[in-house]
Structures are given as C-alpha cells and as structure tokens.
Length: 176
Image 1 (cartoon, rainbow, N blue to C red):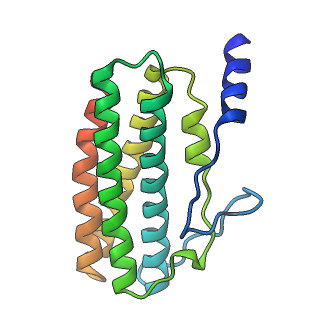
Image 2: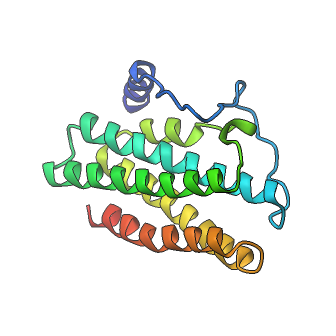
Image 3: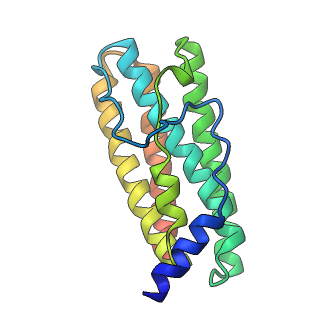
C-alpha cells in the first residue's frame, strides 16, 4: 500500500506537459474510432495518434531521467537519447501531416500513456512499461506499413522506418 501512496503523491506533483499543437480530450473518455485507413482522414488519424504517442514518450523519457533516483547514470543518459529519437519520429509524422494538409488538432487525443508512465514506481517498472508501449507501437507501425503500401507509399515507409527503430528502444529497456 505504501508504494501506491507514493505513486499517487508523485502523480499529483507532476505537471502535465503542454501538448500543443495537439488537442487533448477534455473528459479522457474513449476517443472516436479512427476512420477507414484507405482514406485521407483515416491516414491522418493514424499519423496523429502515432505522433502524439511519440510526444508522450519523449516527455516521459526526459521526465524519467530527472525523477527516478534508482536509475543508473548510464540509463538516464540512454533515456535522454531515446527522447531525442522520439522527437525525430514525431517530426517525421508531423511533417507528413503537413504535406497531406491534415490538421493536427482536428480530432482530440488522449494522454493516458503519459499518465501511465509517470505512475511507474521505479526505473525498472518504467523500463518495462515503456518497452510494452514501444512494442505495441512497433506492431502498429508494421501493420500500417503493410496496409498503406498500396494507398500511400510515403506514409507507409515512415511507419516502417519508425517500427524498425523501435526495436532498439525495446532492446534498451530490457537491457536495463
């Protein structure tokens, strides 16, 4: 029970980042389902969701590097490097949205990933939770690459490139 109280106290003291230009869901309920993948709007929904996941991961890696006293200096340095990788991925996704003239704030997003990550009670827990999130993102990226290949080759390749780079992030999490 002590760990739960410590986790809740930490969450209460962690300010939520400014998620601009994304539009956060106000009530944190389930979001609208993504539109069909073979449409411009559906591609935009996937790009937006992936970009926002990258933003949350970047913020969480930087936050973890500053807040987990049980993390070795080598791990903290690794987290900072991974945060920059997440930023790079976000920029690829947002650039593609701009090319397709898809508004980032058109549909709301949820920051539940961020809140889940900052709830982790230790550096080890954070690594494992982040590895799971990265793995889910990697699998989604591979699926989008396959399914978008005939519809939008440029976007498909971006998702594929990110999925391949996520393998390194997952390996790092388990190394520590």
